[in-house]
Length: 124
Image 1 (cartoon, rainbow, N blue to C red):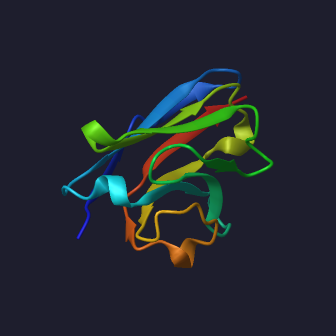
Image 2 (tube, one colour):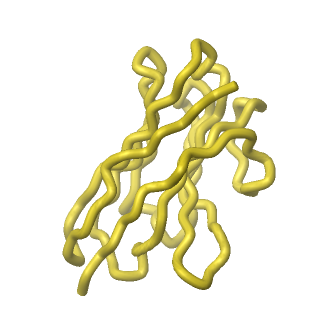
Image 3 (spheres, helix red, strand yellow):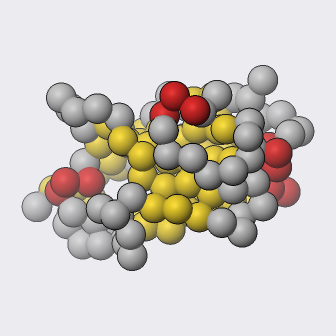
């Protein structure tokens, strides 16, 4: 069992940056791939970024490529999402998720554990 807690969301202006954190419980954090997803009002949850168990492989949605960076520190049981050059269309609830297969996947149904989400609002 893995419990995930996101933090770092907030209200920012277009062009600003935010760093989201995802703190995981349990001693097996390093065995899981991690992903960040987001869900805007009235829209389906969508994949944002993923990272494999070691941090050697990352994958991004086209909409955030070049602006967002996913990373992890296994010694701290924490994953991160650095978001730069934020746009109003990035406004959503952001969720982190853990995947027991340890490889990067993009479908939400493939992830086993989810955090409660953190709100990111970008004003124009």
